[in-house]
Length: 262
Image 1 (tube, rainbow, N blue to C red):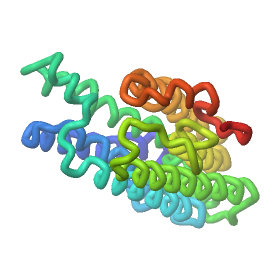
Image 2: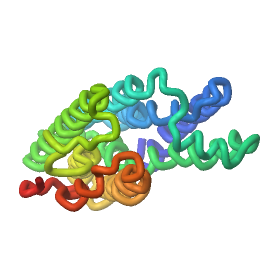
Image 3: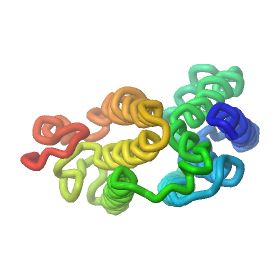
Image 4: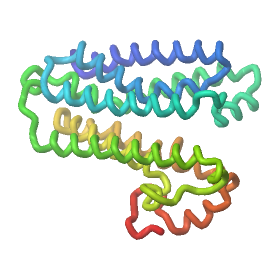
């Protein structure tokens, strides 16, 4: 398959997944289920590309393994975090505003929107999967080594940060307080930073295959993490829920780790 053919074909599978999730959300009256499948959706794209894309080779297989590891870990983490808690407050607030229209609104602004993002952000994955036979079977180079190190490092940072936060929140004594040790000593959002590192690593795989187009996905993901659904969204309300956060903001970097923090 060519790159565009693969994008259209894998996009169809992603669309089917998110439409299925939308139908399930109507039955459960819980749109939060879409978050759990955000990571696994990228794993779906990577496996679709590996099986239906160009000739199998070391780079497509390596990228699929890395994306699957990242996506499944994130999906399992979000499932465990949300289990038994009901609908996420973001979607609950939307439901309260739109009332009976929430189903239709969520179809376009949540499910179809995220499906589109998955397809676009997956650009480096699709580039690798649609490589020609000669490119796919070529030996891995130094750029692939750097990309692998970045992805593995990002997964480790994200995983450790999520584990530290989960343990902190599990302790009733920390209710209303702010986690300011471990990785959270150096960044207010080390989990989001780790996520960005993962995607810039995947972007390098895309760069090694298809040039600058491979960096489109990481750029969009980083923008989302910083300005839309990550740092910006969380910090709109966290200070009202955790008074200590005001001082924490003064002493700790928002995103990029700063070793002199606190």
